[in-house]
Length: 274
Ligand SMILES: [Zn+2]
Image 1: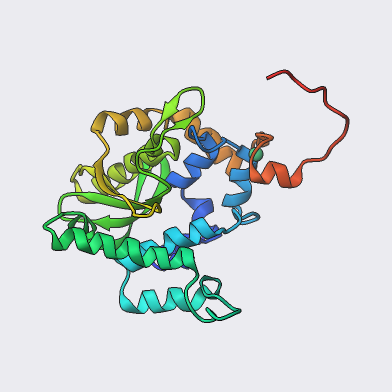
Image 2: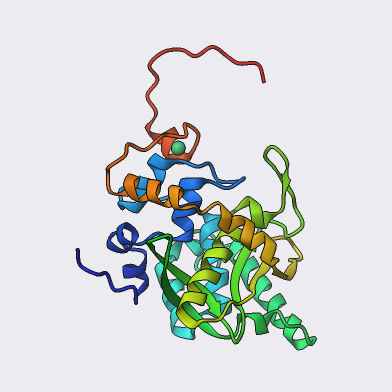
């Protein structure tokens, strides 16, 4: 097997790299989080490049915030050029940013205002951007792409509905556990440790889509990172590896986007009482 270079985003997110390496997002897809259904079949299809989560406005908004706060001028220009859907194509506003993407400009401005007022939000985004790290966990190769590797910290920038909202799934969760950002932080911390010898704190720089937007810098406590890492067992990783290379048949969750898209109705089901 050729060793995929991970230097460009295309290579990093490409099928060769996804098949060779495990990653935090693969673990989230295979193992699930309170907010993401564990679905082996979807996760295998994603890793093999046979299915992509449908892109939506929320994802594009998040990426636009990322590039506006951590990207170079060239990267920002390239992003705008490759996302014509951000601009109105009709009527008197033709050629202008659509309302929700204008809101991104307000969010970015709000982050800069924090700095003007002596806040540290923007400082948490200073450092090496999109640094790729690799390492080995329980004998399996991993890759990670860090938003920011700062001087003594790791930061991931997250655009969220609300920083304070709690989500319900057999219990209440904050957005960090809900979306598995604790697991992501744990993997990043370990890969950075294996690469540099430093065990660094993991920060989430969160910015909300509310009007006016909310801003926060949250350190995920070490015990939360350790708890998340405890789910990454040798058995779990061996199973994922066997699923990825086709030795095991993946289970379907029956609820995710992939399962909705591909299910076949073979007989009526009896309505269950909830
Ligand atoms: Zn599924």
